[in-house]
Length: 443
Ligand code: NAD
Image (tube, rainbow, N blue to C red; front, side):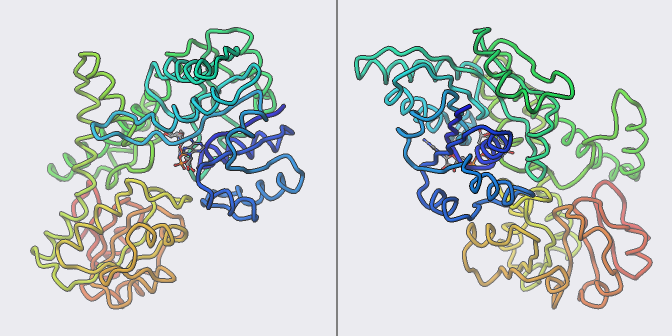
């Protein structure tokens, strides 16, 4: 089948390459000429495990092409996927300008039936706005060509995106037109062989399902973080509590890790957008508000611990930071907890010496050259001349470090583990001070 994808970011590229891999002819469109030039020259603008190789193979097989030409994109595919960003507006609601710009382009150029498949995370009711934008653009050129708008929210996780797309837990298809639903089912059939994962539903329920999933996951994290602060206050160990509650199958072990807050391009903005939607309809979403507020406070926690440990005197100190991306296996720095910590450290007069396996170019792009930020080649180099170590991202390579080496390098001999991934007892036995989340300092 012929498929066009508007937006060649995390979601667009992964969707495009996976649909090409199973035999479709896919054209990916982006408004960013530098991104398209890079893709056309064999480069990949983002880090995602397995993506480079799949792009290479599918480009060579002629099933995957890239262009900035929206008109060519509209001509190409029966399916017109929308996978552009929906960043938060000033008031927290989702900014639909990119989604609606794509809808207008499609309306301006379509000359036959098209299915608009919305993969971007958008508030309930957006499909109606997309349809209106297509109709307006069509009528401006005196045409009325048939089309459908489908809500097909994406649930991939950065860092495991290819696998998530190839073996999805579910494929949500929101449409009021049964024939369109069957066409989507056919497009997704290669990813649906093991058992039927396609869930057909009305458009609004599909749109809300995506927000509900992200809000639920964010709630689990904020709940555990709230409890971790209570554990610390009462002298309990949140890691023991975690294992204790996870054993109840109604709760489960998944996604209940305490830490220094959630980030990324989805949870923060989607919780805010859902809260905004509810408020605009006169409903006060108290739980969603608390989820966001707890996370905001939690992202500041590691700085507070560092500040308290050094009695407020951070001027001229150097803090080693391990991990910059918002989670492992991605270079995505959007709303990463590391940014909150680094910016607070700089404000307090400290320097940061950081290492991350993949997100240092992105960090450099965001912060540019500055005297109080050194991005170094490996985890050990980050410790050189540093007073303390802060662990911000749970990359596998940070989990079992040589504590003796750390002890030798760190001037103040203290580790702040923002993800509770290190063996605190071993660190303490080596003579280090180990401070983590939701546990009293180990002795
Ligand atoms: P992204 O910022 O990585 O990519 C968006 C791309 O769209 C950019 O390359 C941008 O240049 C391009 N673009 C903007 N306007 C365009 C236009 N008119 N025509 C063509 N291209 C255009 O964003 P992303 O992380 O891929 O997210 C896309 C959507 O998917 C968002 O709504 C997001 O919430 C949702 N989502 C993201 C993830 C994730 O893990 N990143 C997971 C599920 C859903």
